[in-house]
Length: 597
Ligand code: PEP
Ligand code: MG
Image 1: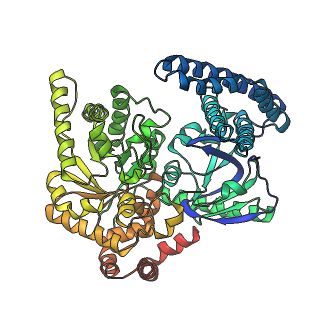
Image 2: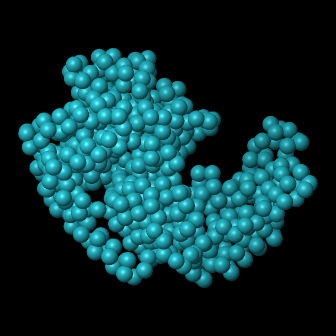
Image 3: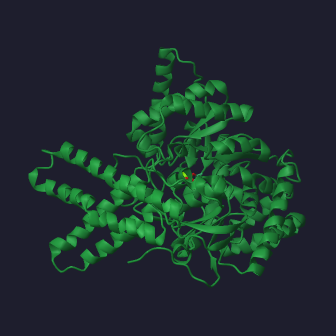
């Protein structure tokens, strides 16, 4: 039953997916989770153990008080025969043996309160599960319930403070939830390594957003790594070395320093425009998730924001939502920071593999469920508040609104109608705002790609979201490491779809841009330019390398190459063609790229 630290002495190399480049060398901090709530294993000093015991006692008391409150609120509603369940839970929280056992765990093993609760609950629930009597066997679920309540309480205001760490750490977890980022003190985090996730999973996007090396889809790293183990992450190679020997560490220190030098060199030239050798100008915008990224826009030479993932505003906030004024302040900052280039604010893209709203039931198939625009049209007050804040902030710059996961024109029309209503309300109330702003549609669903000519007529611009478009076109869960090999951005079907969208947009004279993760990979970005895409939006830190890639190619030659690629049968054939021809077309760039590892 003991699920604590699993320290292994041998060094081992694990292969995963290269989610965010860079090399991190440090010690593991392992997060664990049950039911989406992450907590961590932590060794503590004797003095910290006393603090942990205090936290534990407070958590028992607080959980008890909360449960009593629930019981009295539900009295009558539940009916007498069900109250005994809550009574049983209250008794467990009063059980002196249970508290004493958890305290003993902290004291003798010097671990944090969360881990002690987890261990004691696992042991107890395990014992109940083996009992023959069905009634008693059921009690294991009650124990799990109590444990969850205690862990929830512990992760509240008395959360173990990461900033008290005296060394930097590499986070090892099953997955990195957006909320995890808010909980961690990123000044102490060197990188991420996760069991699950594909290259466009949120773990990967988050790592790129905060500019930290990451490897995802490692399957069993949480089983193999214990807190405190030495670890190396090679984000570009998609490799992790656990418990490396000294010579291995030395090799990676050299590699890390060289890697940093190259990246600094690339970013120094950020004032040069992304123009191909034959003079085709490509616009490079930034994908932004976190406020801290706004400051890096100028450093990396981003031409405005092509995608602001506004749902990140809700990190660690739900079920509470930021009100109109709070949102206004954020959007105003984006408008002011991007000036003439402007910023595209994507309406909350909730549900699916992202954050979910309270009050909506869990779905069996969330990727096909009530997410993004579907949720906005259902929870209209949230949508209206957001649009109001955007229109007000628009008087400080040039904002655009983008709608995610559109699959029918009705959704676009409904959204437009609501936006018009909000404009009227603002005008009537006399609030300062600017109603003139473009409305864009993200092309993420195959149906929308096929109907792009219609969308081009009714929307002001189209923005290809390749992360989702690939997921839905190839029927491959973008966050599932088991099918990550089938998630193929260079699949001929993907290339054909993008090529189709370029032609449709040209014909309709509709602005077209692309903001999926493909834009952040130099080779894929070149392929996109070859297909005719002229505006790319990507993680700010990836801009310098992609800019260099674009400056090293001749657009007419890559166009010819891609015209061949779309006629090929498999991703392997496309990769082989590009792998053969691109280094010939841009030898210097590809030599530098391969030395980055
Ligand atoms: C996309 O799907 O390509 C996209 C940019 O949006 P997200 O990754 O946030 O779903
Ligand atoms: Mg998307």
